[in-house]
Length: 120
Image (cartoon, rainbow, N blue to C red):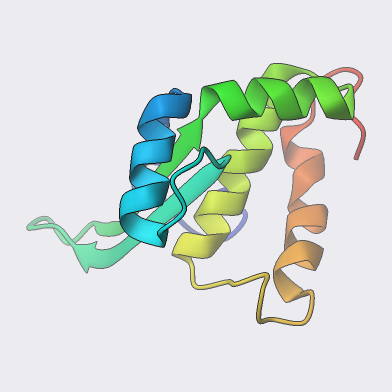
């Protein structure tokens, strides 16, 4: 997916946490002390070598497991969907304000991250 949008593989960091840690982050940065599936922390700066660093995407593995089960698709696919969602936030997309632009892009990119039995 990163190649599809013209970025290198090391431009974003993914951090995987449990419900408690995500609740702490969500409370500290959003003001809602309960777990959520994904949070993005944009940086958008260049390191000393000139490589772009978009920021960090924090994914709650417990929430991902619950969402995968509810959606009847595999856990690894759910993690990839959340990684894509977080990445798009780092790129400046905001599904709450963009009239469906982010959602449309997610749907266009999802076939690149499919697993057997995934519902696209």
